[in-house]
Image 1 (cartoon, rainbow, N blue to C red):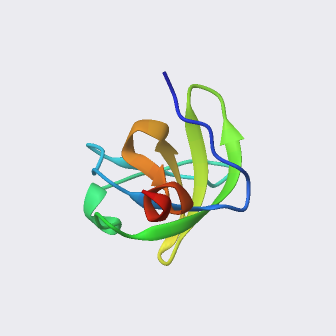
Image 2 (spheres, rainbow, N blue to C red):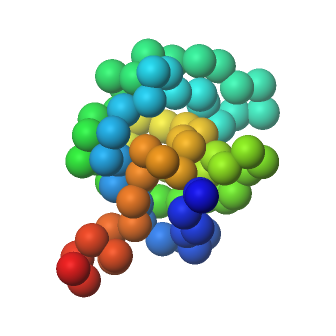
Length: 77
């Protein structure tokens, strides 16, 4: 089951995927070390297939919901 996020909310990377895809109009695959575990980003939009467009310090990427968590949710617990 994919987790739902609110557009504009902050999320944190909890695991690195095998690769990351840029959120450009012509997506490109990038190595996973372009983002780090624990890095925070802002949700830009929802994409098909459980992917989220997230803006990080090094760009915007499509991240599967299993690799991110809400920053607000983790600070409450």
